[in-house]
Amino acid sequence: MRIHRNAFAGAVVVVAAVVALAPSTAATPASGVTVEPLTQVDVSAFSPFASLPSKFTFRRITIAPGGTLGWHYHDGNVLAVITAGQVTRYETDCVPTTYSAGQGLSETVGPDHVHVGRNLGNEPAELYVAYVNLANEPLFVDAPAPNCA
Image 1 (cartoon, rainbow, N blue to C red):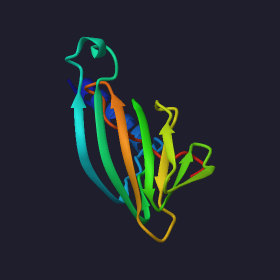
Image 2: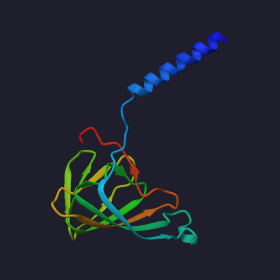
Image 3: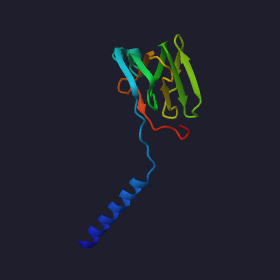
Image 4: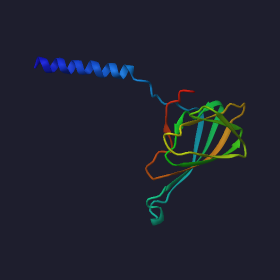
């Protein structure tokens, strides 16, 4: 039994070393963000939508000056309209694109399209956002910042 105990102890040391040396994949949390759910509609019971995106979610998001949505991606389509202030969006190349009140944007879908929205202005930014997902998909998935961030 002594051999098995030593093998187990050795395996624990190896696993602990791998975990300790692994690169951090911590998500980047949002800050300064207020989310107001407006409505959600599930149309999956209707036969034309049975295998298509079937959950429509609408939210009003306010980002305080200096606030961030955190790095994330979407599994479903997202459309947004900025109604106040400005939002600066960065993708994995870290090139900024700024959207002002009255402008709209759409998000590219999938984990290879990580992005962040930030309010670099002096007034709150407000967005109305529509998410189009399959019934069990999350609205967004937190992700680590890319190397350029």
